[in-house]
Length: 211
Image (cartoon, rainbow, N blue to C red):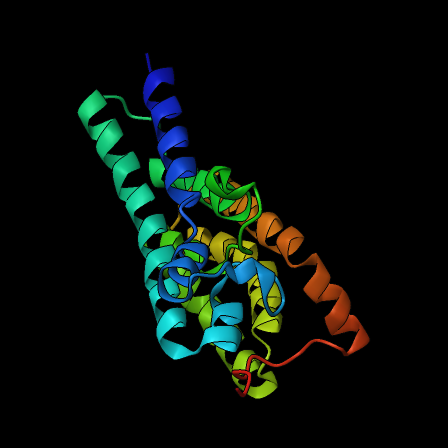
């Protein structure tokens, strides 16, 4: 039954996504929980602000890697099962990996905001849309020095970029656009505090804190 590989894909995606790299790196290197410092977010930007480049880089690698692994595991599950879901199962694994990252079962359902895992997923399932979004968001981040602005703008642009990509390739837009819209909503909800601060003009830049 196709329900079995679907359940395995969802479960593996969520459990892999729940492995929060920022929390693990902060505990491993500093004996602390990153959620107790800075903005309280278990993500790359807060790791950079609080601990610097190397811990932030390790967090990037971990969050990107777990999301990419979730996609690859999902594809392997369906390949071994012999079932064809009619879409790339990496999309489903990616959705659950994002949910796991934001609401990790291992860490009291309090994790990061999903940007780096989202990039990891998109690199494998939707790299062209990711490239289009990067062209929009990277200049915003560099000019404003606010990662959250790029994250919010990128999340808004992602469904439109994906829909345009599917039209360009003469593909059915329903699955790809539907999944990335869900991704975008998750990231935007996780950034609701940042959005309020951006509107008020009180959002802090991502420069590392001085010791």
